[in-house]
Length: 438
Image (cartoon, rainbow, N blue to C red; front, side, top):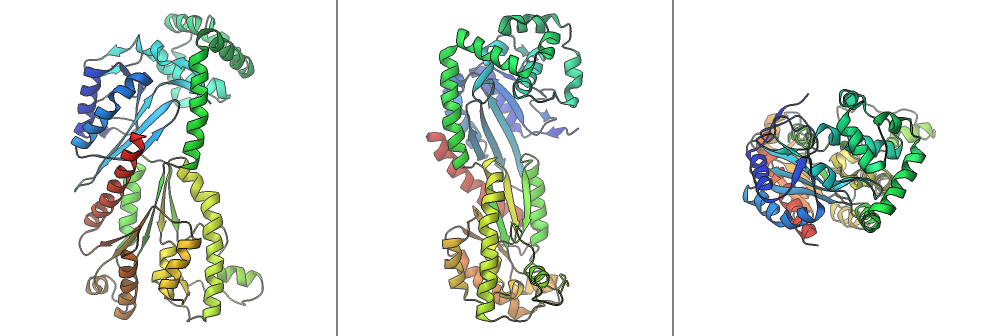
């Protein structure tokens, strides 16, 4: 199990919460506020109380030189993913839960757990009974099994006097055994009947909030995409691997693609299957091995890849971004613009850029990773200066366009990683500050 040292800002945030609001950490609170065994920190808080401190919380994050790189708001949770770029970049995630609910239906109001919260000398946390109920009630309502990794917690809840008291108070159920034996459909009816009797107005408001925010979050996904292009020998793979590993510490749904979504096979394989080509050249260690193609052949190849980009984006990429995931492309459409020899699309780079603007789904951040010709030739002796300089000229053209960011990798990979995180974090922070004001 991971036991990660947290940045000092976490202790500062908990000190701020201790002084200003009623809250309780929901789970994995051992070691906080200096260490954390989990990917994120789950905090239970009343929605109105959170609204009052949100502005000050953002100021505290900014004062500590962190950037808000993801902000997500729904009926039951508000998420902050915060990052800092320096010689040793750091990242953390805070999830503020307003109640336990499923599809807008409130299962466990926050005030129930908050009135019994425990202070351990550093932070407030919920009791084990509420830690269990938060997860169990949600899974019971949607008809899913309780995770095996939490079986130790569940075993402590049988014949638990305090849990039985809570179940009686909330649902008029005498014990966990009775709740366990209850069919999911019956439990749902029980919850809906209880909500109608005890807090009808709050439940209806939350249902409205659920549908409004669900639609909004579906349309405007809170994930983001990063694409990399550049000449061979620039150290792109090393930089991408470091960024991917860093982001994965918080963003578990981080997906790496190569060149395109690959809805369809390689063009040469498709042509071979169709009987158009007799053999397929699979010498992928030499990406520039192909002969120059005609304008007509280049345009057909462009159309083939374009269909893949369009269909793949809306059937794969967009779905991940909607779920707050991160998409990383090791080469994207920008490679078609910059490296004709690799893609065998010999069309004017300005035409390709404008074609892409109109037809190809854009990524949030297009990183043009390069270095001066001498540095690249030192790293890869087999490359030719003319090819490198041709790609760099096209990179310079794209760097002047909106949405493209040129990054020089003449030094160490860590220096390039820091520059790229600087770009992504700063831009995400600006976007999220605007979202927070709405």
